[in-house]
Image 1 (spheres, one colour):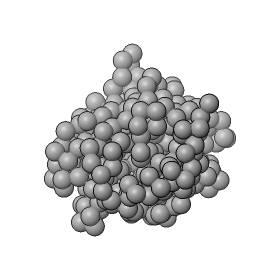
Image 2 (spheres, helix red, strand yellow; image 1 turned 90 degrees about the vertical axis):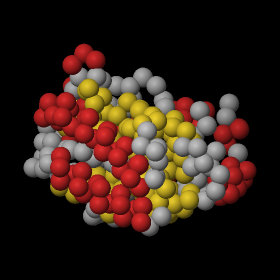
Image 3 (cartoon, one colour; image 1 turned 135 degrees about the vertical axis):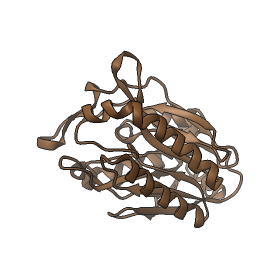
Length: 269
């Protein structure tokens, strides 16, 4: 349960195929967020690396995954904050998992969530993607107990289109929702804020959505607009289009007030 108000940060990055440069960019922004007082800091989906093809990303996993998970733990420990971020990890059967990993302030990995809904879409041109060709879907909804910072419900990008996933998270006690993403420009401009605000409103939760932004390589670009949203659906902070931070207060009194005014979770049938 959230015990007192604190600052949370959704980080916005432009990850490329260059692992070392991406980690350096992430470390700089985490340090900035920590200096500004953030106690919970989220990195976007695929923060360590975005390659031109899924096959290239999958081939790099033996190198990138252990480095990325150690990076999250080290950053959390160094700054004394909770850090989460999206990584690609090995999976049984020769495929990979699209994971969200959470590290506590001591640098201990406390939760891993494998993306359940895979991005198989036919939008035309470079926006036609088949995530399931390389990625094994997760099977379970997962929350992370952040102690005094509350119960964090985990999701990744395309999951945001499946409201039943978030119902499962609030059934597990979620008070905040994490939605790290690498949303396409084409879908982002019409759907990003609408979907995120809807998930916050219908579940009366705070929502933290770190985002990829800008041109990653010759084939990939992302929409940006990392946000923090309150349980009423108000966008408290928006990082815009460039790398940067969205920081806002998580207030347990505000959460309790909205849930008392609109007790929709208790009215489910």
